Image 1 (spheres, rainbow, N blue to C red):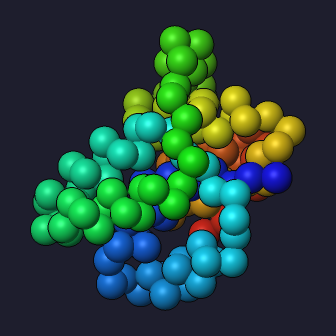
Image 2: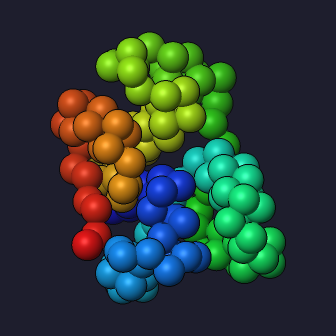
Length: 128
């Protein structure tokens, strides 16, 4: 069984926010954590805004299994509900759904993504 990590949760590992310590503890206790290759792009972009060293981001990314979204993933993301779900969040959700029966759930602090994941009956954790 694997967990899918979105960018909002990944960034908690690299910053000092209210939930960061709890997120780090959760992450250290789980071996199979996956995400989309999209995480790399979003993390590097956010890291530049937050002044996080690129090496720190890349070292953290190396601890996560990143999957490459396919054309079908992009199509599925475009058809997800609700319409208010942002495109990149839809891509994360579609990539998580493609894991299938091996998916334990999604780790996210993003309310829109979390709501959409629950709407398709996925377990969502927000370590606090």
